Amino acid sequence: KIIILDFGSQTTQLIGRRLRELNMYCEIVPYNHFPKDASDVKGVILSGSPYSVNDETAFKADLSEIRGKYPVLGICYGAQFLAYTSGGKVESGDSREYGRANLGSINGNDPLLKGIEAGSQVWMSHGDTITVLPSSFKIVASTNDVPAAAYHIEGEQTWGVQFHPEVFHTTDGTKILDNFLSICGCAKDWTPASFIESTVAELKKQLGDDKVILALSGGVDSSVTAVLLNKAIGKNLTCIFVDHGLLRKNEFEKVMDDYEHLGLNVIGVNAKEKFYRELHGVTDPEQKRKIIGKGFIDVFDEEAKKLKDIKWLGQGTIYPDVIESLSITGTVIKSHHNVGGLPDTMKLKLVEPLRLLFKDEVRRVGNELGMMPNLIKRHPFPGPGLGIRVLGEITPEKIEILQNADDIYISLMREWGLYDKIWQAGSILLPVRSVGVMGDERTYDYTIALRAVTSTDAMTADWAQLPYDFLAKVSNEIINKVKGVNRVVYDISSKPPATIEWE
Ligand code: XMP
Image 1: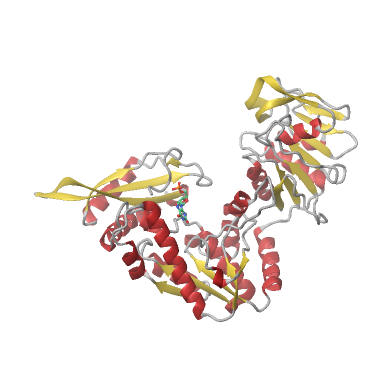
Image 2: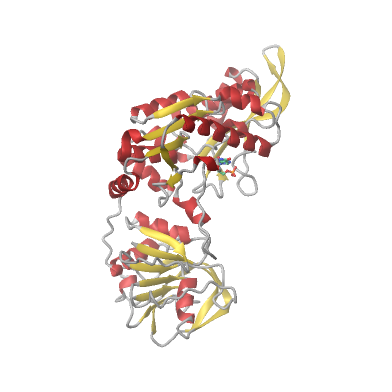
């Protein structure tokens, strides 16, 4: 594997993604947590950082056990850190280095830059420049403003690049990372199939004859987790799927059906009444979330108690959750609890087979496992479901109106071939009524807002430029077919400053 030492850059995750796209297994660890058992490490990458190496508080790693032992690639801050700790000088430049630049001169014999042509576009993002290079550091590429855009350290398999090869705008970035993998002598055989094989073997070893319980949500992550666990331990896995009455129209039945086809042992629990009762009269979004979250745990706990000898809780935690919860400054490594704080009395150990995968890899694994596309390609859907899409007070009647409108919207989106182009789409029922006219009658009904966004990680999102013809069709169908709605609007806000959900 390749170890990526994370010095806190926003693009560290991207380095990991690029390597995985090259079928290379890698792990991102805090800059000061190089693994103790490094027998399978083939190379090390040092990430960028928000700091300058000259800052008192900058992250400083001890590289004495790394340099000279493994091939090393320093990126941006990583490159500056190598120079700085070898007696070079790093200073904040007059011309700050942000954005596009082109590699002017390239040493064609350098293995890191093999096959890269002069003029290749790279992306810079740092306020500092290396102004004095230690004597063993040889420049292998320059740009107009940055003499040491890339260097190699003589006598070592160590390189530094001032630009970011992992970002999209560095045109040959993936090629450079691939060259680094060749230098490391990596086999690049990490594929969904190999992941499944090794994970199932590990799960068998880890779990033995123990019993595992898992909460399914209908989403990609929990579904793929269930299928993997099922492959490893079969009937010792019990899944629980709770219908809180806030799912999409017919979602519970459809998903239960899919799960049965997958051969999963699923207990479906209809808890609609409980949730509607507890949510009655509540309008505050945070309070609604709390009630729904706690209600979910109550139901899960009650079902789990009926089962005997459960030792493990399966969870669909994925890599971005894990990376976010790794503390870069210290040793605290906490796990994300998707089910949100289970009662201590359950005392279950966690098993999280997807914890090292990115979302797109989870989808590829699901595909390889033969899961149906409607489970794998599904848009993200929030845990509290339509509970946070009926703004204000929730009633069963309002949920039904929203389910019907949303069903028209999403079905048409699939029909028009738009579903897979959108990160996430949904409908919102607004708590206002307005006047309309239908036939000869005055109406005084609700408004439905349609939301559709493009995104890669839900951290930022842009409203999707859906075709007018499509919006016209959806609006027409909803107003004509869904009783209680006389107006449809389209949300054209991006995140930030808005959020994807309205509550
Ligand atoms: P926002 O609204 O914060 O949403 O832009 C970002 C992403 O997170 C989803 N979301 C949730 N998912 N429980 C979840 O499991 C929640 O309480 C929750 N709130 C928001 C949202 O659908 C979007 O994909």
